[in-house]
Length: 144
Image 1 (cartoon, rainbow, N blue to C red):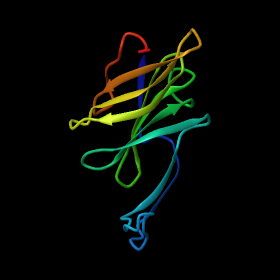
Image 2: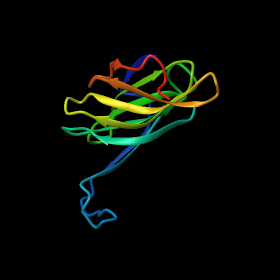
Image 3: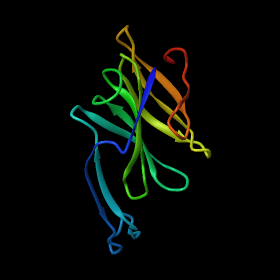
Image 4: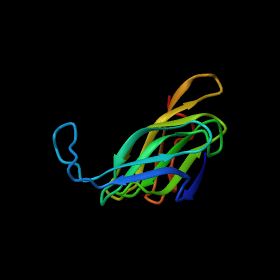
């Protein structure tokens, strides 16, 4: 599985609203609201959002616009203000889709999802990545 990294990404739309008079659905005041549209010409999805220690967010999903194959794991780091800091893809010629992520105290992460196999089945796939997006480990094949 190869990985690629791109800093600052292809942001198609960003907006920040710092209106402190807004409230959430639970009635709690919102400190900020913002919107980021990230991706490319093909279908790209975010399946999981994780809060990073020290601020910011990480998004896990799949991209068809970038990477090595049909669909690839997509790992995007956002600033507290919603700016794309960097993004990574992990994949092969097969289809891989990240559905969840867990971030460790050292900011490394475990990405979990599915991979389409040559036998036309879906199997589980997990990979470990460092805080800078470098792949730390992956199983020799899909876990299934």
